Image 1 (cartoon, helix red, strand yellow):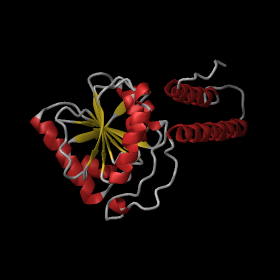
Image 2 (image 1 turned 90 degrees about the horizontal axis):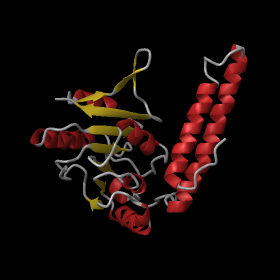
Image 3 (image 1 turned 135 degrees about the horizontal axis):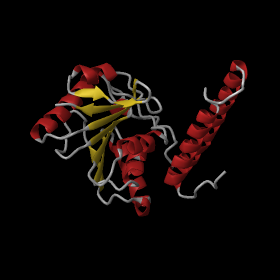
Image 4 (image 1 turned 135 degrees about the vertical axis):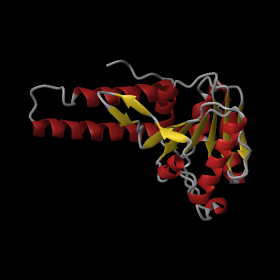
Length: 250
């Protein structure tokens, strides 16, 4: 087995690749295991992957100090806003790899909280990364985090904006929106309308990374986004660690 890389981003990708390889090795193409033995082996791999991910998550939190709970979060304690919870470390890297994100992309994390995803995104060579957060306290933490880890960032334009997502002016060069199930109902509808209005002002392709997509149907009901699919012996929905990736349509 190759040595686990020291670089945090490369370590995340290495762990995910390793987990995928183990799952495939013990999959249906593996020979003479009986169905029961194969199922048992798959369960063991699944448990091992969970332990590896839990350790990686703990290390990620330790490095960034983002694991502490938020006890007083009045800005989120309103209808259709979801209390702050940090996004899993492995979701964004896998999604950006799938989207082949690069220097042409501008990513906005809606409900960025303590800035964990903004920091992760800034380690990619993106054109611009923006975090939008309604809580001034969480936004302040995010700015401190980004300042402390600036030397790790490959993207040189990174900012945190304190704003209500419904009134935040969508940049007309936005190409990737990240939602960690930050809001629902009318708030989600308003943000989607604002993104669509931006696309109409400046026609372009916009992708949505929607983690824990509790209201994915609201995205599809706009008629302006489709759930991405890939060819693997048949069409199937792209689901990345409980995330759905949508793409804008004309």
